Length: 137
Image (cartoon, rainbow, N blue to C red; front, side, top):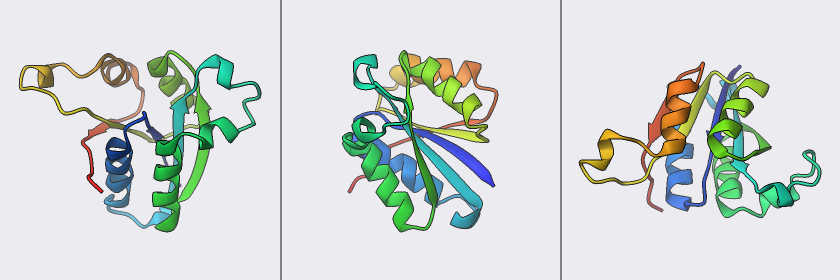
């Protein structure tokens, strides 16, 4: 089973783009497990097993529903702050094979350097990291 970590932020178009990238992978949905995560503020995470606060985040449910409707096995997992450290820890905890992150639209100069979270994950991840754009509804 190929396991992908999908850390979403609060932008629905980016979350949709990340989910669409997974759908476009050259293998059947039955061969891929997706872990959808979002870094929750510590005050919102009383019990790591309680995912109620995580499902309150629109992008988490959007990515989960999109992928489940297409036959993917999806697990939700609450990340921790700071987000880059949480993503890297989650990748290790869930033994993922790949991380698929969203990207903001940037100016030509801004494209030279990714955001700080993306950059840290790219530099420190022990697994491949794919940065994808948005997918409009």
